[in-house]
Image (cartoon, rainbow, N blue to C red; front, side, top):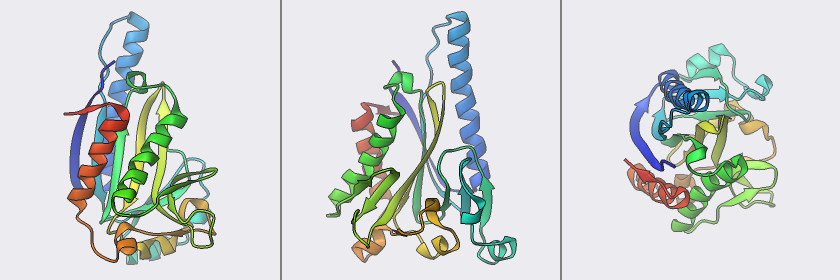
Length: 231
């Protein structure tokens, strides 16, 4: 099992450009797996982790409801945002500056073949990070992602998850609100959930947070949980 994970921080990047890169990496890993299965080639599959800050964009998962996008084309133009219907699970979400979006493209045959466990591990990364900042991150029954004050009228989401997997190869991933402009969430029903709010690390701590510090923490907890080596 190859537990090396090639890491790239793409900086500020257009959503479509990054999606194309994900698809390219995803297909490369899948092609290797298919070759191994058909020809018993014994080739090692690669793993990847991408970090990116997107320009303002709304993405709708394949099972999502377009009615959860509250902005029309005119308003999207005014707020400088784009919209894509994509091939991950989940409903609608927002990506933008100040948010760390991460795309693990992993062959889970190199780690464990359990999507439920995979999602829980991704959530655990951010629960641990929030604890480092004195905040109690939690899971909400039946809803992926990481939340604060679950079970109260003040429940709010701070990290969204949405993944796709085929032959145990993953793509898409997580979006962690650090210094995110939360006003952009006003134009959607985030994840299709009407009765819960959205928050960011900056709002909770009442100060701007160093993105590089948070990225370092994500890498630390990712490697620990997945017993991976970032290269």
